[in-house]
Image 1 (cartoon, rainbow, N blue to C red):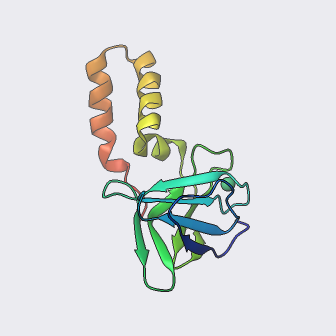
Image 2 (cartoon, protein in one colour):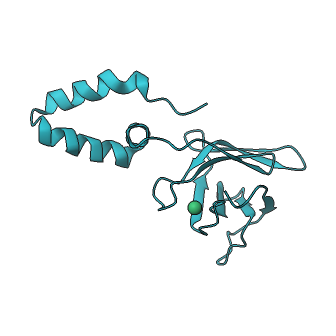
Length: 137
Ligand SMILES: [Zn+2]
């Protein structure tokens, strides 16, 4: 993880060109955007909603919850943004990623679907593994 801290900017629109190390927060559009803190510069979009990320602003710093997992990027980085600090988190296994993402779930279902063509068994398999696949604390 190249970057240890970020700053934040409250903006109306997310700018076209993102500065590295800046988390842009648009309250109007309920979205935060920043460049990946590993240094790969990929654009990380974190929608703010009860089902997505929560942003805490303590008057000085911001915190994003839950962690940022960049599974769709080559870097596969995983970190927290906590009071403007970038806190590295452990990498997830592909099994965990698969269990936590709709896209991953689809891929997993295709995978098991190949091995178990019976659709009901695919569902049973998923239900049986649900408890193992929590978001990290
Ligand atoms: Zn990255």
